[in-house]
Amino acid sequence: MTHEILIIGGDGDLALRKLYPALFALEVADQLIDVGKITGVSRALASREDLLERMLPWLKSQATFSETAWLRFQDRITCLQGDATNPSTLEIFKQNCDETSSVIVYFAIPPKIFGAVCRSLKEAGLAKPSTRLVVEKPLGSSLETFLGVNAEMRNGFSEDQIYRIDHYLGKEPVQNLLALRFANIMFGAVWSNNFIDHIQITVAERVGLEGRKDFYNDIGALRDMVQNHLLQVVCLVAMEPPASRDPFMIRAEKLKVLKCLRPITADNVKKSTVRGQYTEGSVKGEVVPSYNEELNSADKSDTETFVALRAEIDNWRWAGVPFYLRTGKRMQTHKSEILIQFKPPKHVIFGAMHEMSPNQLRIQLQPDEGITLHFLRKQPGLEELTLEEVELNLTVPEARKKYSYDAYARLMVEVLKGDQTLFVSAEEVEASWQWIDQIIEQWQKAGMKVQSYAAGTAGPVDAAVMMAHDDRHWSTLES
Ligand code: BG6
Image 1 (cartoon, rainbow, N blue to C red):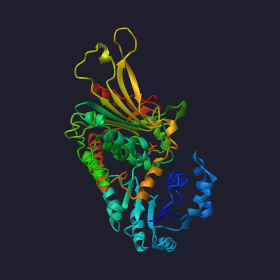
Image 2 (image 1 turned 180 degrees about the vertical axis):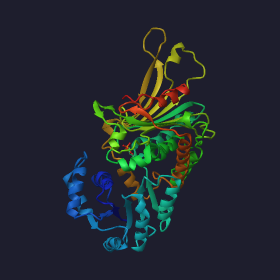
Image 3 (image 1 turned 45 degrees about the vertical axis):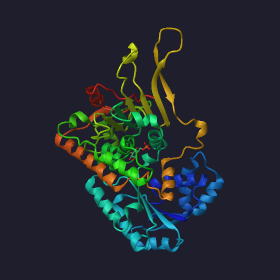
Image 4 (image 1 turned 90 degrees about the vertical axis):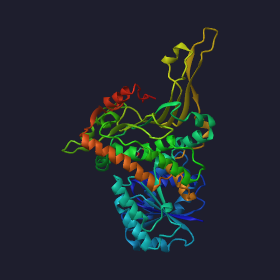
């Protein structure tokens, strides 16, 4: 079956920066064979030429840009000037569509108009069983608002027609987690509270508000990053082995993890959560303003730009293993990683071992992708047996990477295939919001204000104190 792609919000930031470049990368890789037209729709679109001109710089910034692929790609692009919430706009699209094609509709628009666009698709006769809707965060700002948006989408479309993007699931190392865990018996055997001491998931960013001040100030780090990206990573780390690679099986296992997250309560909210906000500081040698200065608002904001959490998963496999999550803006470095910290051997025969770090599996998501396994071995030589720490590098060598695809390109391939494995189910989003909502409620009840941290550092002191309470420490943010 061929597909027609309709991008609503076809000249917006998301479309220009991410969607056209992702589709173009697929053009270069000959992955658009089953795709017919790609149509951008927007009220403000002047002309097709204007759209092509605006997307070109983004496509040219790709390492694999080629003029021949660009000629092919241009042939697919059409544009429609109009309001997608008005069925007559979409009727024009339908008239130009090949009747036998399925339509993939990408919602590159704010969720507040998702419902109106769905109604318009229905009235224009585009709500066929073969139609696929692709949406992404923010999917609400609480459980209640998510249920509202979702109900509007479900009016006319079934769950298996909705592809909810979490772009972290399109990142190569995140996908590699499944291979690492379920294709290697040695990891399967030690993946539990018998052998793992704790897990850390860090997403540190150097950037600040990046022109999204209204959106971000309403939402903060917990809802912007933890509710979706970090919890999805938690799911992949903690889920039980699925019976098969069937999307239904994988999503069902992820959901169980979210349902086992222990609620944060009034008793532990101060010990298990930290809220931070950056003040003026220096990032990569450049002086940057505080969050409040960036906001440029008369009132001081209490929105968190950093959050650290100690999460626990109440099930047989993970009881007693804390999952420490942290994410922040304007931190000292740009680094995202998953650290699996194993326990030391139960019986020690080498005296110096207590000074060395027990086994660690480190999965770096960005800026560079990598997987390393840290362990101890004997130093070579005739001298008395002495241990040394070494890293076993499981990273794919550069020479084997033909081209590193952006998460969006990978996810678009899956939408074209009709495979929902890498997309988030409504039940998962619901369970995530449930957990996040109660943290926000506890913050409000406890009157927990943000702690300051200077831009360019590792976050507020309280984040380190949280770890110190447990006799642990965060992994370094230095590369
Ligand atoms: C987005 C958040 O979902 O993810 C942004 O809204 C954040 O605030 C971004 O900067 C981080 O994505 P990545 O892929 O750069 O880690």
